Length: 182
Length: 387
Image 1 (cartoon, rainbow over the protein chains, first blue to last red):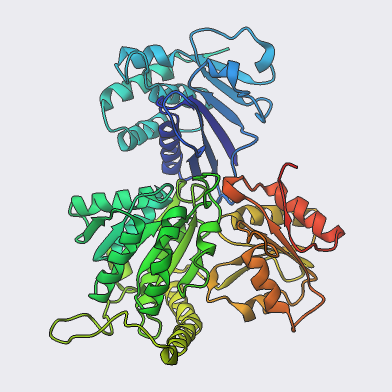
Image 2: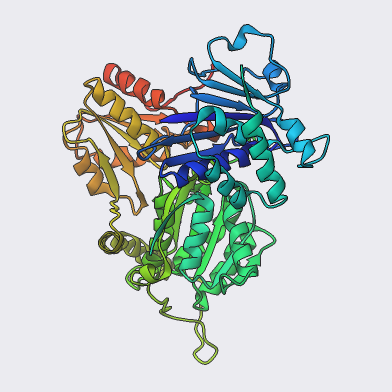
């Protein structure tokens, strides 16, 4: 079983990102489970979403405590939330960031960065001050992790994203090309 | 052909209500039930489901509308959670006494206060004594299947009682997972046309909800009591037919690795799956532990419970509700009563956990099993609580 935890802020699209990834993995014949960290969702507040997938049915109804990988939609969260809590050594940390963090907090893990904010602004996804970065970050995650096929992610976007379909798909493709492994 | 899809469990329930060709839905949106009725409202608005949808001004009104619609002979559905269910409470008894086959999904949520939107079973335990049949689903497939089964059970003329299908708030209702959605042709082999026994008709006037003087009240209650106990055979018959058609097996109590188990866990709802994972991991370490999942809560499967515990020495009840000021939780009372005068050597631990959405983890069950194998049972215990 592989477990992934998404860290974002209300309005960035972390929950939808988990749903798109789930639908891509589902299309590849996996058993998938995804759910948000349930709470009173507010714009700008830290949110989490969880995803599990396996080749057999998943019999767990608790949160993800020891993820294999984490996806961070807002780099500022690394200062306020212990994002690596429970993360398995060697797991991927994908950060939406333009800069390599100068911290040894991530030394046990594999790190990659993508300027998902820049891509989202370029394609006018969300407001300029509050861009929706989920489709871009998924493109980057698809590339580094190799867990799902890009075409299936794009199919998932068609299913879950109601507006600016072409722009979202292009954001995913751009991020797929631009992601940097540190 | 039936189709396995990745779908949010709430939306799968809405699909089931649509596939059942429900005639009337009355509801008031409340978290975490909202996604079910939102989707149903959309289906009606888009013409996907030809039904009346009434967005009531309160849950009290919603269930009252359901009463009227069911008396008139319409297949009727509603859904609610927590305070919403509590607001329906007085009508709940009436619904059962009027023998109305209404189907309700309760998305289980903690009763306030403190105000909580998260899951536990304290809401539905308040409806324990109303005369509604109650089933508990532990995953999306069961939630979908049981919603369909509920109509068959409720509307059977040997039953004619309302049915609650319980699903855990958030940890089931908001999860996307693979669910096999039956297609209409497949499902038509299972569903029946609703034929109300005494439909309200101006040409043939009838009185519903008449009052009963002391000379009649107890007889009326006894009829409901007999109906709910005899519904068990019908529920099992419906489950057998469902199994034959679609290959999914349902029983009042689901047993897992119980054959040689000295210690048994007992769960309701979604935590049963987490407990199953815990049992697998403990079995790998050679611990003889098994699991009972209570699927049918009303009528309470007393004999099945006694049989399922025959070889066990210790039973650990894991329940997400408590009766404050009493001797633990409602399941604890019921289970202890089932063994009183039957067995005195079964050690029964009544554990209350997961209240107000507190996460129940695999390790929690391991700790409980270790604890129960070392300690004598107390009246009841709350676990995972800070002092």
